[in-house]
Image (cartoon, rainbow, N blue to C red):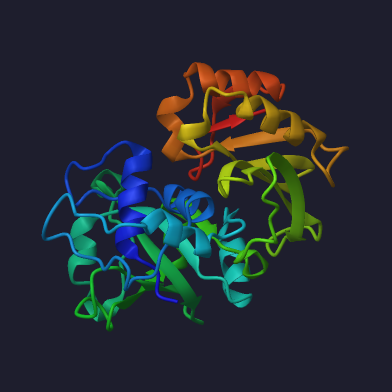
Length: 305
């Protein structure tokens, strides 16, 4: 299936609060993943990509069509080693980086150079990593059409990922479709997939789900890293906030299936950096028994420990 880029872009902009605004604005990769998980995505033929008229006229029934194609989970990629491991397991990596715009417009020999200095990194850009070669380069696919690079592809130094990536995500191959759902009431469930990037333990998903409305209310994802039960995602859809679902999800996370003996650690990505001081975020951290502080990782703004 070819997914509707227009639906994903519009819903991501709406979720970030930047819609309609400037039609050239980008979105966070994590927001895209949240849309794919909570809303899904219709087919490209149902809502083709076209920004010549902005804001676009949305066809009827898009949210219903999108529900047929919801993903079950997404997982954070933190290191170059994890990136290469994901690629070896046939999982493309959605990557956002700090860039020097001039270096990307027409890269010589389709190779992105390392920045001359960090002060020239004036923009962020998202691409898809699809492979790597034996010359310490990642093979990337850009979104600027086939006239850019080598028919839309180019080579990125692996050091670029290590130094300047701001977020990276995969959709695990075992998590591309949802398990069967009940249609009775609002309920919670937890499940596990193999952690294709980590320590052999499951990648755990916890969800609150509204059966009668067929709506994903909220979800959290946990993995084991460095002796911690790392919360890679904790999200309640905006339309369900203020109704106690955040408290319910936090209580489920505290039980941390599979990782009962590990302390919790919450990573807060750049998409949520402006919400850290909010009453909702602080209340969530308190329920989880965590204190939020700035992160030293380039792929997270804050960490709760």
